[in-house]
Image (cartoon, rainbow, N blue to C red):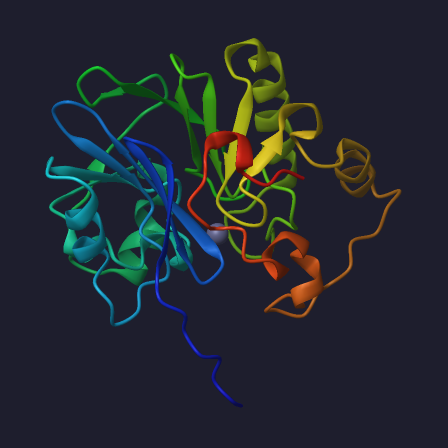
Length: 243
Ligand SMILES: [Zn+2]
């Protein structure tokens, strides 16, 4: 099989202290506070250094939070000293990255960057230890893979549609706390009103009235409509593509 050519990291300036870093279809986010910076996920990881990218963007020490331990989110963890994730991800993380140190985050933890803070919301389903991060002051929710305009991978051990549904219900109950959701795949900004994917589809498939389809992996490119375009040019928040 012919290997797909890796594209270099693409950095988008969201504002003067926030950047998205696109790595071949998955998005990491770097947020800088006055004391430290937070890197949410580390992409697939290729030969290129992700730390070289974050070093160009911030002088603050960088801590990593992984929204979960799927391979497209932990690829470059080894380049960073402090890596945090929910302990329900440890088993799959250690299977993929044996020997790498990791520290726990829990529901309700606040990651204080100095003048800027992100709260941890545990949203199991896509994986057992998936988390979302809420920047309450800016009214932004980082949903990882769990809230997205594109298909959410739900096959394999530890994934639970019913847990995912409960987690999405929980986010719905919190939606007064945020205006937008930023996703890790597909168009970056997910409108909160359509936030949580098709609840009809979720309910139907869990009741058995709808049948799921086994899609070939990797998904066809047409499954990711937003990614056909090169939307990651430097821009303002208002220019972030939505779905
Ligand atoms: Zn992913």
